[in-house]
Length: 214
Image 1 (tube, rainbow, N blue to C red):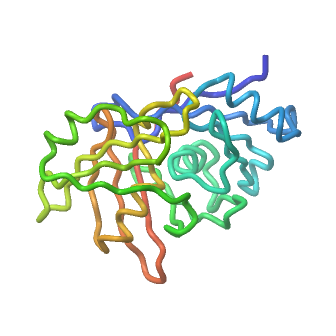
Image 2: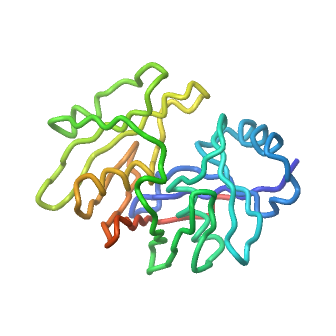
């Protein structure tokens, strides 16, 4: 069995919740893309990261069904684990920093795959949603406190690969931040917390707590 770590990314203030992320620190043990895809499917996490160069921060990201040029929460987790100034992804170079209990990355909204954003009137409506059928990648959200930038959100990948709901989705949070043009404090899924802040030049910072689960 290939060795891998499990992180929880975008945890709540009490250390709970967060999205599980698989990280294969020695990516060279599975150099072939088909092997990596099969291993990611076997693990079943929303995303799995393969580290190809820990010193330069070169990483490769997979869902159980597809390879991704970029994804938010895997980069936040990898930035915390590798503690490097940047990550190199197929989409581009991602700036990183650690600030107290938060791990931050800086990336462009257009690097993420398209999603369908659905705004609801209240957080309770988002809480009551059922998982939609496979098809679109749906990010459902509502203001909890618009003046304070607090958002309630849930993410439904719609890929039909066994991941019905994504507990914490950095890429979608970044796209929403870019669309709204303001910093956000997002509670997604069962209770994960995602912080965002727009930056000059169409860049967006996104941050969260990371814990090593095993």
